[in-house]
Length: 349
Image (spheres, one colour):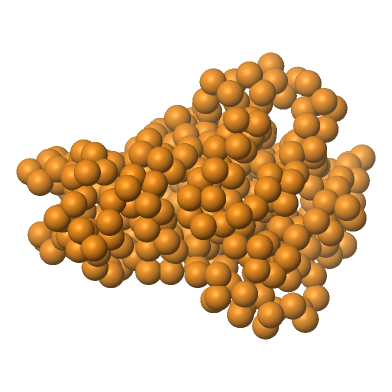
């Protein structure tokens, strides 16, 4: 399945959509029915995903299937597939939580003062990559010079520009061509490199029988996180218990997903993404390989979804390179996750 650039629409497009949706009423808390006995009534829950329902969201699937959201007090749980302008949807109140990234949320806060905050993250390390074939390998940023690189507009072009900037490469020395999300542009020889996801197109091309080489952005100057949970300042103040309950359920769901990649893939292929004609082999590989992006030495010490001070600082520095001047306090609020682990120390066991 071709990979989207997430909700990294250009700031102008995001802000236009934000203005159009500003009048929409929040859709995050209808009265719940049939929630677990003794659980608080937190109402229904809407989560805006960043992409289609593949194995990337296995933690959410497990949290539903194993009753963690219900045990927390939520009624009906709606996982809305992307790609979408997640920041707009969350800011307008259509979803309580969205899956996004610092690179997507920061410009909306800067330009619109949207009050979005990241309260935790699934992927500690982003999986963006420049994918190439071994016969014409792009192994270092310097190898980009003189090459034709296929980059999707609407967000990935911004990231690619930042990759060139941080590595001191003049964009004029690279032939950048707009492409869609079909990696056949690479395998057919139309481009030398293709902006991709390590856990998506890179696997697809490899499973098609090609020898591939990856140039991961995270290892070459852009170590930003992604699949981060974004919410509004208003919800932090007024729906704090619901957000903490959400994080608790997510932690439990992701523990299960990490422990069982095959079931993660099955839930995507046969249940949540059944209409997408996903391939089981590819989804199993994705579920396996994303574990290293989610579970790290830092999360082993501090807990799943946590964000260390060092990682926050690295992301703020990455944003500065991309041209977004914002402080950690203007983008992150990790107090809820700290409270969840303080109140549930068994989650660290």
